[in-house]
Amino acid sequence: MTDQPLHPLANDGTAFDRVPFVVVDVETTGGSALAGHRVTEVAAVIVERGVVREAFHSLVNPRRAIPPFITGLTGIDDAMVRNAPGFDEIAGGLAEQLVGRVFVAHNAKFDWGFLSSEYGRLAPTVLGASDPLSQLATAQLCTVRLARRLLQHLPRRNLGAMCVHYGVTIEHRHRAAGDARATAQVLLALLQDAERQGVYTFEALQRMLAGGTGVARRRRRALPAPGDGADGA
Image (cartoon, rainbow, N blue to C red; front, side, top):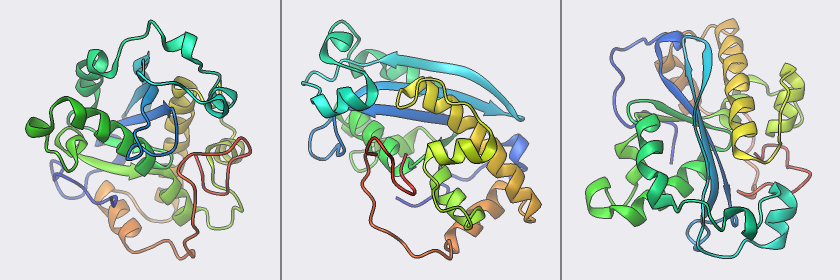
């Protein structure tokens, strides 16, 4: 998955404050949706015209056991999700926040992959079996990729490091709502840095990202360890 627009926005040259962003974070039972791991918590916040507002948050019953390592990282255990709704019960409410907006996450490939897998379980023939989420969101933007492009001088670009750099407070680290709110603030700060570097529209931002980061790619785990990696979530 690249960060190219999945559907065209209204006009070429869309200023950042006219782009409807939805910033998403998921917690999961493990690092790979392809291996059968499931979502345990999801949160989405809307960013429009520089304003951040709460949109959606729910624990999710993954209908499988949560490994002790994950509980140690997130604090979410089997008892917490036992009476939580399954993804099928919250899918509609979450979809309402995703439709027509640019999907943003820190390490977006991870969050996008899990949600696309969850939606694919529900309606593969309706939403498209290969990438169901692309039928909802208009585009995808990864704040890790954006940070690697704009902040090449930073040794670490995981969410914790980005929040320290921009003076953003994370409430409840490695929980969906806290991480989504923090990522939204980081997004706004990154867009300001993009403007300082002469990038003023979403389309120009996408072209910049498509041109590469100028930084050698490193192999990273999709799921962050307790200490987080240089560019992890």
